[in-house]
Amino acid sequence: MTSLACRSCAAPLTRSFVDLGRTPLANSYVPPHAAAMPDPTFPLHARVCDACLLVQVEAVTPPETIFGEYAYFSSYSSSWVAHARRFAEMAARRFGLTSASQVVEVASNDGYLLRHFVAAGIPSLGIEPAANVAEAARALGIPVEVRFFGRAAADDLVASGRAADLLVANNVLAHVPDLNDFVAGLARALKPAGVLSVEFPHLLNLIREVQFDTIYHEHYCYFSLLAVEAVFERHGLRVFDVETLPTHGGSLRVLACRIDGAKRPAEPGLAAVRAAERAAGLDRVEAYSGFQAKVDAVRRSLLAFLHQARAEGRSVIAYGAAAKGNTLLNHCGIGTDLIDYVVDLNPHKQGRLLPGSRLPVHAPDRIAITRPDYVLILPWNIADEIVASMAHVRDWGGRFVVAIPSTRVIG
Ligand code: ZN
Image (cartoon, rainbow, N blue to C red; front, top):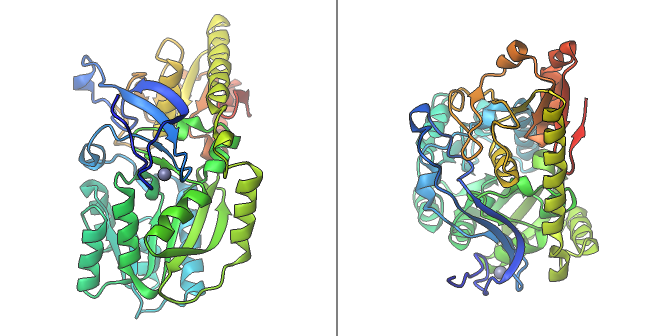
C-alpha cells in the first residue's frame, strides 16, 4: 500500500477510524441499460490524522467523475429550503448586507440559498462545478459560474471586482479533494472585512450517533471544530463564532474572518463547542478508536430486523435514494433479497438502480400500490418530514423504521 498523507497538514495517515470495505461510488446511480454491468468498487476507509485529528477518506476517483452530473438537487428537501431562507435573512441583517454588497456562494447548487439574497436585491454570484444544477439556478435568475473553486477561481473573482462581503460555503468543505487549495481560495476571495460562513456535519455527532452512513467516497473529510480551526489558521482565517444546527444529523455553522482584516471578537458559541469537543475527547486521538465496533453493531441490528421481517413474510421497502442510504445498504450487504425497492422524489433518480444494492428507484406513489409492511427511512436526518408526508402508510398498518444509531420502529 502506498503511504497516505493528511489532506490538511500532510502528516502520515496511519490510524484507522473505520474501514467500510469496498463499495461502489455512492452517487453512481445505475441506468437500466447498464443493469447487467457490475459496479466498479473502491476501498472506503476513513482514517484519522495523528497530528491535526482530521478524519478523512482517500480519494479514489478524479472529482470530475463525481461532480460532472451531480444528481443531488438541494431544493428537493423542503426542510433544507426553509433552513436556507432563515440563514439568508439572518446573514443580511447581522452583517448589514445591501444592494452595494457582494454575496458569493461556493457550490451554489440549484440556487436554493442565493435565490433569497437575489430576492432581497443583494448582488449575488454562485460558483458551481456541476453544469446541470447550475443551469437550474440560472433559470431562477441567479448568476452562476460553472467551475471548481480554489485559489485560481478566487483570484479571478477579486480581479473582476467581486470579492465577497459574505462568502458562503455550505456543505462543500467535506467534498473538496484539495482542501488546502480550497481554504486558501476562501481566504483570498474575502474582502478585508468580509465574513466567511461554512456549514458542515459535525464529527462529534457522527461519532455519538454512529452516523457511519455519512461516510462515502465523495465525502472526503469529517470535521471537528478543532480540525477546521487548524486548517483555517494555516490560510489566514480565524473562526469568531460557531453555532450548532440540526441539519444533516447535527452540523456546525462556523463564521470566520481574515486574520489580517476586521477585528471581530470571539463569540461565546466558540468556547462552548470547543468545550463540548474536549469533553468528548476529540482533542485526543484515542477517542477515535472503538468506532468500528459501534458500526458493526448497527449492521448486525439492521440485518437481524430485515431477516426477521422476511421470515415473518413482511415486506420492506426503503425511502430516500441518498448517498447515505447507499453506504448503509452496501456496507450491510443488503439487496433486493431483503428490501423490494426504494422510492425518491427526485425524478433524476427514478427508473435507475442504486449502485451495489441494485434496489430499483421508484416514485413515492408506488408505496400506495404495493402497501409495504415497513418503510425503512434511509435519510434519517429528515425522518420527521418523510413520516409526515407519507402518513397514509399507516392506513394499511405500515410502519416506519430507521437504522441509525440502531434499528427501531419510529411510527
Ligand atoms: Zn493532519
